[in-house]
Amino acid sequence: MNIFDLPQQAVDAFERSTHWRVTIHVLDPQIWSMLPPNLHSHLTQVCQLAKQMGDERCIAFDQQAVRQELDRRPEGFVKLCHAGLVECVVPVTGHDATRAVRLVVFAGQAQAGHDLHRVNPLQSPHRMEQIHTRQLATLPVIDADQAMLRLELLRQLGARLQQWLFQLEDQPAQLTQQLGRADRRRWIEVFIQTHHTRDVDIGDIAHAMNISRSRAAHLVTQVCGRSFGQLLTDARVRTAAGLLTYTDLSVLEIAMRSGFGDVSNFHRRFRERLGISPLQYRKRGEVFTPLTVSV
Image 1 (tube, rainbow, N blue to C red):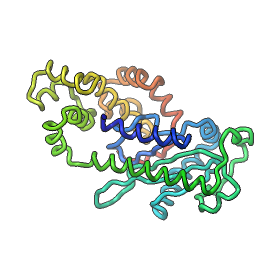
Image 2: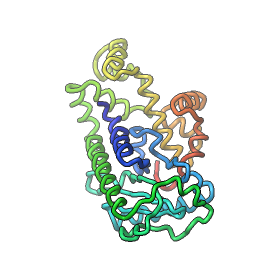
Image 3: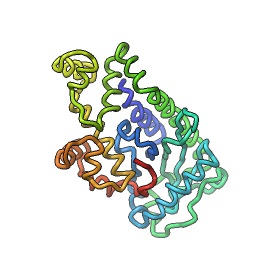
Image 4: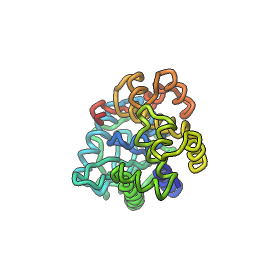
């Protein structure tokens, strides 16, 4: 299995078993190229409606109050937003000395049952009256016991993602050398992830592996099932999606920073992969303050 397929596979298993959608806020830019863009944003219908009525409240709650609460409850918690939507939240940390939070994993959503207060949910100080009962009625009602079960399952997903991060945190040079001998597919994947924002082509892999360009191109397609160019574009689009979500950089600068040579190529490749333009992707996603993540 491709190591970069693991997050989506783990999320799919959680979503199938709980019928709750997972969203991941990525606090480490190094991870953007390794996660599918569809995981960055809450895209449920009720959540999108709430955001249209007051994005600033979502910013204050999900980016400030939730992050502060994670310092108090690093094991995760249940939250109730200003629109009345229930979600579970867990952090995923690195294994270095700082133990800094690198991912914040959300799962939801539901209506609050009568006894949800028993799980001490983090509640938004604001309430939105515009979300009508008819719209909330499309969501299931969750009680305290069900919320704790969902939270425990989300902790297990968080542990799986943390295990995945640990694999990625090995020193790149050592990892590349090990994988070059033991597993060519994994070696190629790591090479692309660590070099995709640069001006790189199949000749660089050929040089690193001490083989011809034609042999390198054949080998990549043979062991990965896709061409070097396809794999490279996928990594660059994922990085661009992260930059569009978490920064206020211009489209031109994002094109350059994600490894695309020009804006027209960036637009074409982005739309091919995700079906929408970069600006459309930015508008439909979360509204993050530019300082949330430094680049």
